[in-house]
Length: 140
Image 1 (tube, rainbow, N blue to C red):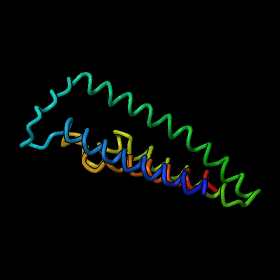
Image 2: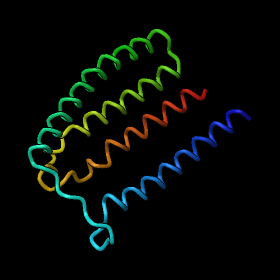
Image 3: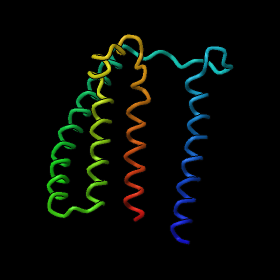
Image 4: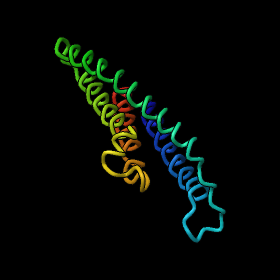
């Protein structure tokens, strides 16, 4: 019974987040014929600074994820538990997230000048997968 309430709370939270995301994206990212005025374009120097900061943070995340992955793999070799395997999968998903959210990767795949393309969605998808894995592991 308690786990059913927990799952229901998660489902309600996810639905509320989807609705909030739809409402806010309609307001702040209006389509061409939207009644809302578009947001002003960002300052080029400010954007360059933010991209540099995001690149640094992405590399720091990679530097933190790799030793964490090694620790979990070593732990799995000695313990062989499903929980540890789930943590390894979650860390691998976070590794892919860190790679796909790095602006240098965006640039290498040609999405720097024309917008971010699929890289606006891919990193968040991996975060969602990691959170689902973490919720699954935590609820067992």
